[in-house]
Length: 249
Image (cartoon, rainbow, N blue to C red; front, side, top):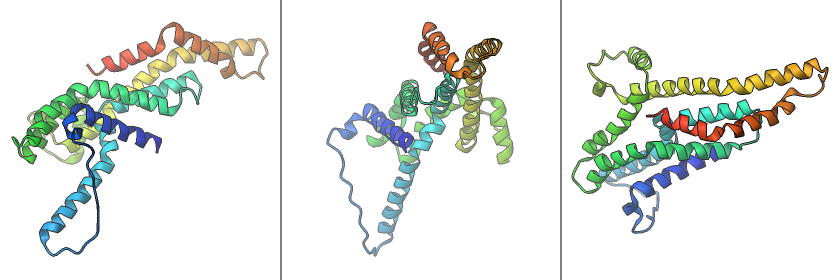
């Protein structure tokens, strides 16, 4: 529940930053009611409202699956486990940091989506179909830049689609799952690299305690200060955040 609230707050801040004029006249008032309908147009509007609410409920999942959030949050989770402390940093803080970094990384893409799709549609220059098509292009380019060809080939084969001639022919239902598993693969690689120095500290501390005959003392308790000291001395947060952000460019 806390993760869902954080992601919804992120979406609201995202819209405020890139579409401030939508909020310049105050917050909209929405009223829902159940009344008998005598025309097909009323039913069409009702279905549109239901569809809109469905999309809003799926918005957090869309943010997770189509942005840099997956790689960042999984890598930070591995870092937390490597440090060996389950309560610090708290999960809410890691999710908040992942959302902020996602906002920073996706800002150019979101700006391009707004300029190519949202703004022309609001101004009446483009139709809904053209605005949606042009607005999805920057997101497609972002995902295709990060995805592996092997993962794309897997889902093209599983979907039974013919081999495309170029990337523009790939549907989103193929790009999205390929992008997700590519992000998970890379996040696990980053997690492995993060685990190595802390694992060495655990092994050294356990060997020293065993040689001293102090088998009743938990090695994790003794290794924790050394892990924190190493992480602080190498300026760990700076290195981790820099590596995560640069991995998308």
